[in-house]
Image (cartoon, rainbow, N blue to C red):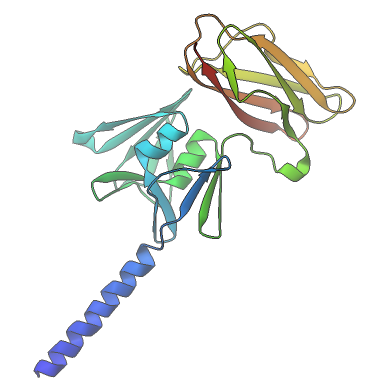
Length: 238
């Protein structure tokens, strides 16, 4: 009888261990715009979850926690995202969307599905060979030969920025720029511009003398393919 009980316990233990391995797969590495970043992702039932504050702040956003409702509020430029622990309903700028995985608390950390973050904040995500690739600088595949072909990664306050974009020939594109605080800028030189016969279009604008330090979000929109291209420039205050 004791042997049977022992055998049963061993079988149950093996089942639990195998279930845990299935639910929590090997920890993937994370690469953001071509550089590895130090975050603590986990995979649960085939879904990648990341610490909310870590990943959102890396993407230039902010996270607030409200304990009584177990609610996470993410703000990123003009986007506000509301999530609740163990609830698949996510509200993005007032619109509710149901996802197939919920935010969870794991080891006292609030972990949010990367799929939700990517959807809400407009970044591209790919998973290959045990690595999660996150792209914020463009949503266009490189082989399409469409994207920024000349722009600074870092700029200083009170200097001019020139950004050149390779798009479709003789096509109107719109350049939108947000400040580090999340406000849409209206500087002269921004807005609509027409590409030349080779598809190249450029904008030049002045970084204001009172501009705060941080990452400015760049978006280029337009063309027959409804392009939406993202870029970031870090502003340095000397």
